[in-house]
Length: 118
Image (tube, rainbow, N blue to C red; front, side, top):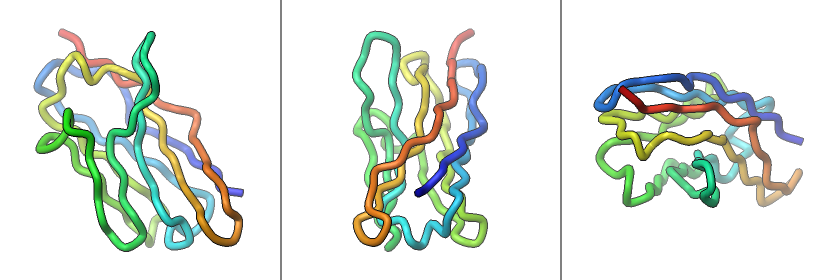
């Protein structure tokens, strides 16, 4: 079982920055893929960015060049640095962990609200 706790959301003006954190209850070295998803009101949850335990990253086209996902194995934490934020980035952001081997599962955090508004 993997527990994920997000933090770092809030209200920011367009063009501003935020950094989200996701702390895992287990060594993230044992998690195959960690990612950030978001869900805006009335829309489906979508992938924002993901990182494998080998360090490979993947981004949604809408955030490429603005968002950066990274991981700190020593702290069992994954980050999402969000720069040049736009109103359309407003959503609840969820951390996700995918384990393919022992303890196989698809785990979610509780979500953190990001609001981009002037």
